[in-house]
Image (cartoon, rainbow, N blue to C red):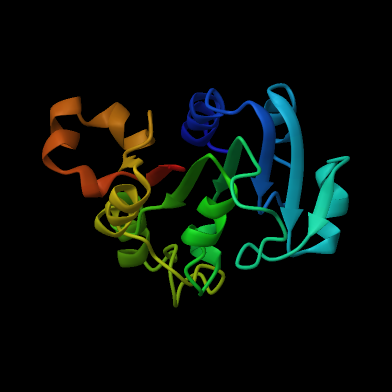
Length: 185
């Protein structure tokens, strides 16, 4: 896990409390942080990942069809998930949480563009076939307006250490990772 991602994980985990859903939990990278903040249910589409996650409470399911009631989770964590799903799953994931945090790679990141230009592979097709949906800041801001949340740049990133804060105010679309926070009405 990159230092930027771990810094953001700790930052966003401060929102977590009570009943938490780790949506697309994978092998449980965020289990310890989330379990320290409340009761957690991990979901993933991979049975093997669920078993490796270490979650006591886990459900094998897709993020596009969650088997939970509306608003039943106090907090939903969806980190590095939405770019892997062709169908837009933001409405479905937001439906089950009172507050939801999504983190996704930014296709306009200088690092992604540099890797693509140098033929090292970028984050989105055809370079990474697992990333099938590239969300832009503009698209995530639309969801922020719909769900009464916000969208923007994570707390820290590699590029924010090189360029001053004023640079990011002028060129916010260049950040490595972008986030969306949604809040239920």
